[in-house]
Image (cartoon, rainbow, N blue to C red; front, side, top):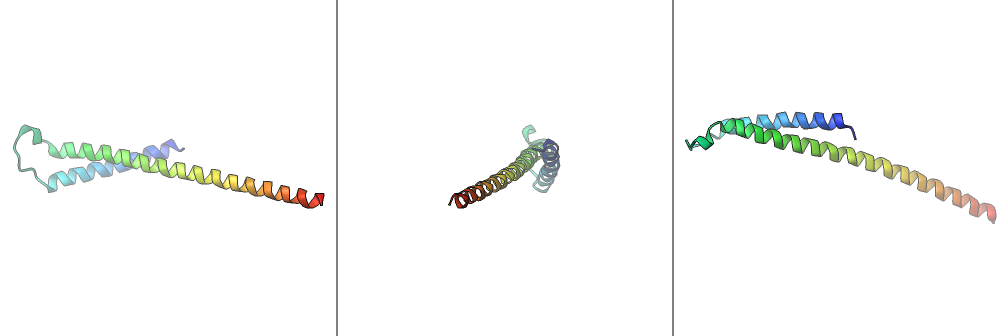
Length: 95
């Protein structure tokens, strides 16, 4: 797996998630005045960033694993074809 690509994908989606969280916090103002609800934009940005990091990294890892699996399946199919063609030649040679 390409760790640099996975890290890059995670960072890019983390920035996107943080931006979305920040925008959502400003578009939906909180009607409450409790101290717990202060700096809600910052909290949403952090939550969005963490969610983006997890989603982006996971998606890229799944894509990388799928490419590896497809390459292994292609190799297995090529090996299977070679074995079948080799056994076919032996059967016709023996007859």
